[in-house]
Length: 64
Image (cartoon, rainbow, N blue to C red; front, side, top):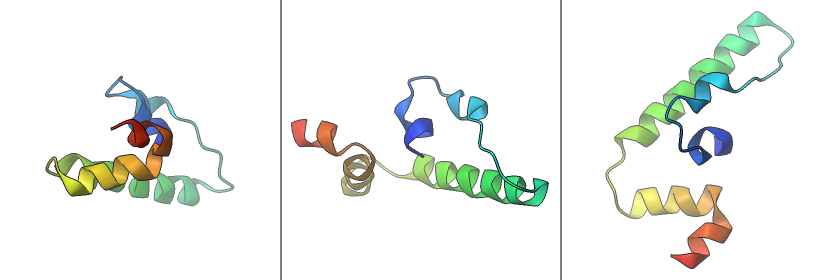
């Protein structure tokens, strides 16, 4: 998630490579990541978004 959320390029997540042992595991991982990104995209600006920012970027969040 840190890679996907940390890029200025909106399509960056499409170029992230993850290695798994089976195609089923790869499909499950892709499904989970995309669902997490969808949930993140639906968040209104506010405390929830700041909490996620603090979780993934603790040093940057200290500057806010």
